[in-house]
Length: 430
Length: 161
Image (cartoon, one colour):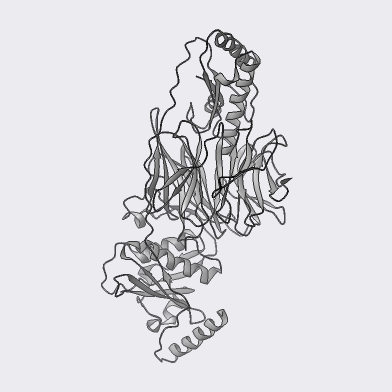
């Protein structure tokens, strides 16, 4: 194991304190043992008053990825804001491998522009200079765009800091439950309410364009699948069949949902065409068939079935509806979630009676247990496949947690109040 | 493309090292961010009205983990329910539940399988199937809270209402 367990336990709550809705608080519990050292020279704001501390948001993003260590500001000899002001030797002495400098300006249309550069200290080179523009109200988006750019330049992997999470929160007061469908930034900030109900809300899933969610709501007294637009809150009830209406999953082209209906007697997987409302039944088995998820090729669906006696993951080929078994290790493998490369499947895996999140490499057949907590469920991969978010229990409370796909980096996002569960990581939003 | 940018970058850093001032090298795109606030939907949820079953009989039936087999105790109670139901015309609802272990959508399917097992038993005893509604809440409506064997046992259930 290349990684040894390093406990940072960094409470980054202070970075989000300015956001009125922030309900989730990030705690980094484990990071890479050989992080890249990066220095963020505080951005020169040129006297512009902005509502967020951009440098702090970028620092928190990079730290949360587990791949970086930030040079403390108090050690810096100067705060350069453009490459020509940088004395590389000073930064090399601090042990920094990279340096970020930048400055803010106001554009004629009153939007803000941050021009920033990434410098490699060892090679004394400017890696890039980039401009991000945004309205004054979207300073957090601007900061995450900066983080994305830096992360990609150094790791070669597209950053996923400008993404969102959808999840369900539940607050219980005696016998009274309040279910909320929430959307927040990937760092837990700017939580917004999409839907509130006294009846269960389940299984949120993102449209591939990031503009809508599908989910299950019991608001009619029975489960039904809904679609809701994030920007307009416009919503439609898509199904109201007898029995189960559940587990929606959007096709990669956005035209169909894979869903589970039990109208014909027991749970089967169907596709629902969102333009024509045409239903196509895909499975035909007396067992439980559920939790469909599309492969990125749009031609296969992974799903959970107990047709072999215990829940296992199967692959269905849409062209001929043929089914092949995918998982063989252990007696409970369920809720597949596939990485965008189509190769790694995250799932709920039971080993010695405990439910963990595991990742299966479809090419090598290697299964890696990623989590050490118990009652782990609902894995959802980031669009860059580097991290996944899942739900677990801590102190008898439902919390969200994240783990990198190699299990080396971990952090928790507990809610300040109530239980949170069923995280769904958005696709790229720009 | 990338090599060209790097080449420019190295030329630029040479310029910096040699003390010349130079305009920054931009990559080919600028990130533009639009306003993307999320709106809240308004919804009123309804509880389906259920007339309580007036009976001293057990109305909750328990199951083993990942199983939907009715035990002897449940079958005995359901036999008596069937007898009463055949004497009147009221409809009943069977709510299936699961414990928190395992995945939510699988558990809602499991809850339905349990409630359906109870329904099939009543139908075999002569109760008309269209008088029995089956609904599953999976692990969404726990009867007991906590993560231990006793709470899990109490949550793996079908409730007759």
